[in-house]
Image (cartoon, rainbow, N blue to C red; front, side):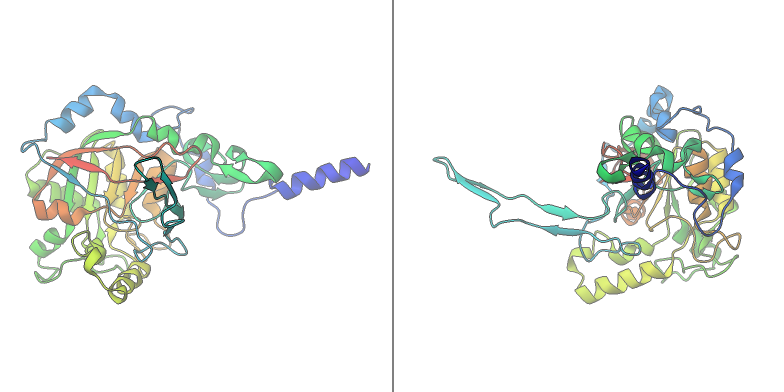
Length: 361
């Protein structure tokens, strides 16, 4: 009897068994979502578009000048991070090792502690976003996270199992990139001053910081490029990322960096839910942008939802999201479309990945 009791306690404390949903809101509609287009057993989601040679050909056809641009942002302890997320890096030892040999070789390492998949330029993978239901947290393709975890000693969660970002990293992305310059668009409408370099943070439905489906269509038409299509990647420039842009970050003072972090914490302009539903209907491969989520917040197109594009695109459909990219350089260079090339790191069980994507144009 004693052994049975000990075994039961071990299971309970390991967190393997959950009797009910998490406290707070639940949405059981997620339990009846159709499987994604890639099939019930899929783990890579929209990265599967890269398997289609036609998508790669379409991407490469946008290259006109044979030039490239890197659009990852800087990783640094004073750069913005959502909530408690923070980049911490040290150089252990000065130097870390050596000297060795007749050539007196020395070397330096770095020690990093951070939310490796969810800091600064960050890719949201299958294990990042889910929906709380009465049966537990539902992730991409109907997987209950509690049932998916890779566990180590004492029940400690060591990774996301079948939801790990490595499944996306095995395919990566080569896609036609469509750049939506929302700042220039709002200026052309007369709703944003020509002197302003960023959209305002939306506080309520109807604010100009919310980009709708009609706005997306209008920006593509104004750019004079082909419609958004299957396998494309879509970048939204709101201007908010300019506050810690690559062109100015290294010269900013600590006080200026703190101001950028403060704005980052207030909210952000971005896609409204109608835009994301439209992009889903176009069968895109990825959304990306210069803010922390690419969702308009705290005000949204429909009130009461928390960054709804995340659950509508990622959890429901496996259409992934890349945040805090350098769209400022894209619009300053005049890039309206190009070839986007990138793959998340193959970190087994991770929720996401850092990275430094390339655009060829």
